Image (tube, rainbow, N blue to C red; front, top):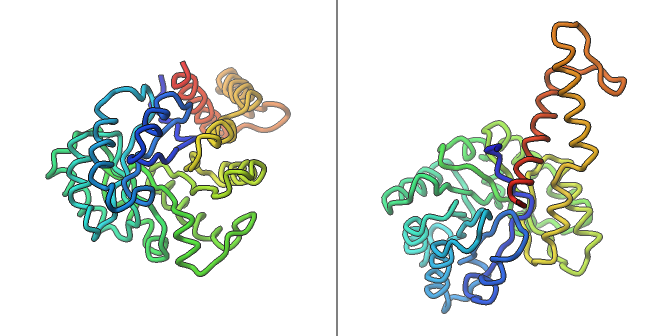
Amino acid sequence: MSEFTPLRSVLYMPSSNARALEKATSLPCDALILDLEDAVAPDAKESARDAACAAVASGEYGRRTVTIRVNGLGTAWHDADLAAAAQAGPAAIVVPKVNSAAEVQQLVSAMERAGAPEHTKLWAMIETPVAILDVLAIARASERLTAFVIGTNDLVKELYAEHVPGRAPILPSLHTALLAARAAGIAIVDGVYNDVKDAEGFLDECRQGREMGFDGKTLIHPGQVEGANAAFAPSEQAVEDARGLIRAWDEGAGAGVVTFNGKMVESLHVESARRTLDIHEAIQALDA
């Protein structure tokens, strides 16, 4: 079985909503972000923290990657959130508005002091201009940092930009974050699509994200899960082609030029085909 972890659909769920947490146990998403931040009112922060930690400990989410999003550095709830989440031991702790490598190191040190198990990683939300401008240093700041989550709403706000189809105002920022993630060898998940009633616009943005190179998309509604799963999974044709290309490469070893479907095959094509099969096999295992 591949070690690749699918992150096609990463669904935010408010930890203050017991019904939502229960529903999430049966949703076909790859990952969950149990939210203590934006989706939770100030007077519900403490009870939401307890509920998120209990959900992680419950073991009821199967193969899903379960994470907790804490409140950001400098907020009244951050320290207690981080300590509780570290002790609960989710797959990752998601931290909003991470702006520097120094902040990553500060967060990792706090996680370790709180007793976070080795499997609990850090996911950094990249959602400010200063983070984009320092994104490679952030990506390389700690081996415990294993994913970026793009906060497109905050990024648009901070740039004084506008939400438009195709996302032209923030494409340079998205590309920069992608470059850093790939250079550092970490995962990267695209931002949310706000209009849950606009299925066509959502699927268009999923396709754009996949074509750009994102591993998946963060979601704000369960109705978006299936579309994201389909968009970020290799198609049947892509899987068949990957297998055929690798077979042609293996059979042609030492024979000079190797071709598949009339095109010359090089080692870089084989690497891409193997990644396609890794993703496919990991999704099959998740759905088993």
